[in-house]
Length: 364
Image (cartoon, rainbow, N blue to C red):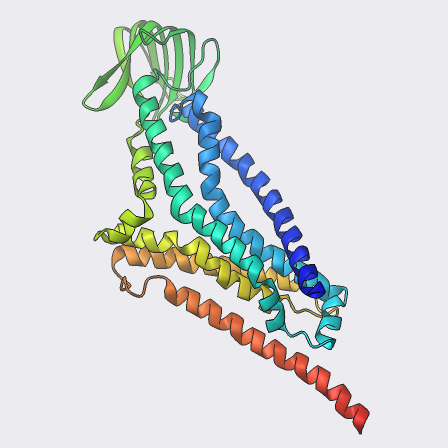
């Protein structure tokens, strides 16, 4: 029991440290991409932290199994490096005994991941969809603020407005520099309004000038206009992506649509991969001081990348009908689980032989 508690404590602490580091890294990336979406007008500024929190749920779905895998692998490898695991084997503790000792910890991680993947993540996606749709109806020129140059339509395009009236959806003293594949448009206008036509949103600019041209050439055209309409970024594609992710797990399971069924199998990936990665981590953890220091960590990361790639390819083939839906993604799990068990039996055989041979030599 003392060894069991010690092993669980080491693996749990390492897993939490890895999860914290990876989560901070991913949140920074999410924060940057969310700010970029606000600058392009895809998201309202007041939804920044709400959207960041909702998207963090999907990140945790990926990071928790990965952190548990790296935590167990790193903790056990450290025990081998310090010869503690060697002493445990000398006391009669095999790799499969280590697996049994850490199983309660794997059960806790499995339950947390199951709740996140099957219930919390779809609810977060649904809420994000509703907030984005509501913002597209209520917010004029999303992401724009008074007296500030901001990205517009692309990372290279910029727009500046001196004053915004949210109630009348009127903007005043506008400057916009919009990059197209074949030209650059520079537009100035006294004022403008937002309007909707055929399901698309536009801003109508009045009393201004438009300069079209290609940089580095003399082909420029200056035009004065009474009115000039600019199409605003469309949120429909953003919401359509969320539709597939925001369906409940029960709805996906009961659906006859092949894409929904493939999404159901892919939604099961995080909880099931916890067990696959758990067996792989224990089987790959045994190392020797004569081997390269991080060889098992590199091997583990390579195995994880291969697992995720096969699962992604499998989900795509399921959606295309190239793999029977009954087979699902189970063939990937069975393949890696079989490899992990094979390594466990092989490594346990070495440990037993190393324990028996010295005894036989001593008896002779």
